[in-house]
Image (tube, rainbow, N blue to C red; front, side, top):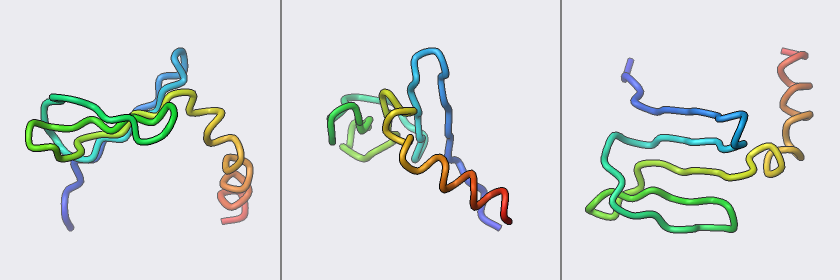
Amino acid sequence: MKKSNKIIHYDNQSDVLYLGVRKGVEEEFAEIAPGIMAELDKKGRVIGVEILNASEIFKPVIKPIQRQISHA
């Protein structure tokens, strides 16, 4: 099995979801959609994605996911 270095963190107070892709130091960021930022390392590789107002963005898919989990 391959070990995963992925990080997922949700901050309930600020409603921000962070998805880490790889280890690295953020050198810059790029807004890829309103409220969605890609963190980039010095080589321009994505090291993480930050989603602002995450509960609003994911609201349409939360209930279907919860239903799938409860029926599994």
